[in-house]
Image (cartoon, rainbow, N blue to C red; front, side, top):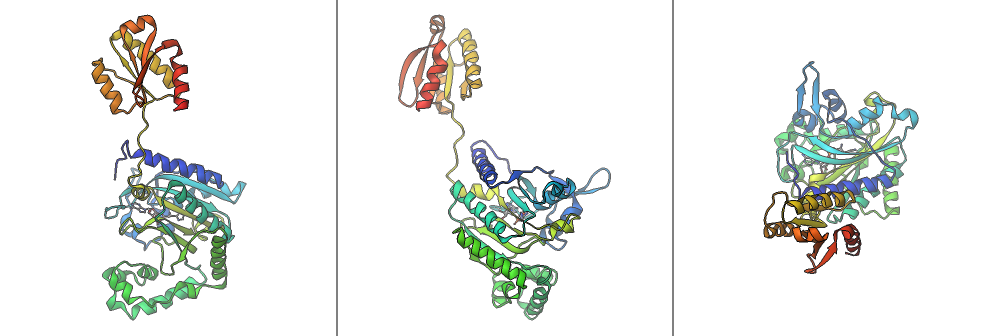
Length: 411
Ligand code: HAM
């Protein structure tokens, strides 16, 4: 679990602001849900036999004996809220986004943390494959807007309750014949979660299952048509993608379209964003039978990818240096006035020498410095130094605000 310090937080704010502005343009509104939910919510949605539910949840009992869990993801809480607040009563279609911390007790490594942050979206109530393409277009737009280029979109279809059971049993039969060649994890989970074996990173498992039956050859007519239309719409929108029939997701609620935005630059943690359709989830959680699709991006991974393109902290427009107590009182008053006008102004509070104050102005990279001594104060004048040009001039205190505003607009 990490602190996000000044110097790094600017990149976070940049990503959050871009998400708000882009998602807003696509008609998504923000929703804020608690970080703690009843444990049962995650067991029922993510799935009892997934890694997340089996071993990664921060679960505890509260003082009334209720089992609560720190949210490991955002989709289930958002669906819980959608149902509980009956958002469907006004309009079954809801386009929502959220951002905030998630918690998974995983083995920490680069790009994988126990408290991490997601920016996610959910589009509820639309069956049409065009919404799948729209959500993916928005995801691509976001990456382009924040300047992350080294990513590619992989998509797959995971079928539905009609076609998946048949595929699942065919896959279990196939895996049974090769059981001795699979890793211990896959030997344990091949019955409960056979599709996960296809996604195993262990080279022996990859080799042993190279010719496994493909989910895409086993889709029902409806899923096949849906997947075809998603691809057609992506081509219409000129969004590049690759079909990866071995991609499965670590959460059980997915149906039909599933996707990942992957990168080669983060080692083993190659998914910067991931998501898919979850057409049965809202009904399973006690709501109306409405479809949904969404994704979540890992903010820490986005920040890692932005790397050295970090944004600098805001630099002061003006540093006010004072000589003597009277001048300090006056600079404090002037500084507060400028701050109210929306300027970034700073001063020294410790009555240090002019030299020390100027060193501090330099350290903060202030654009201008105002020097006010007792003599100047008596004349209601001050010295304004332009730190970039290295020039300085006397300015009347009464006109300082105007002069600064016009200079900064020019700068
Ligand atoms: P997920 O694939 O579990 O999906 O997580 C989405 C993204 O969160 C990952 O691609 C990754 O970037 C980031 N992430 C996950 N775990 C960690 C971790 N331990 N440390 C750092 N980053 C991590 C979901 O959570 C779904 N709720 C996404 C979704 C929304 N599907 C439909 N709607």
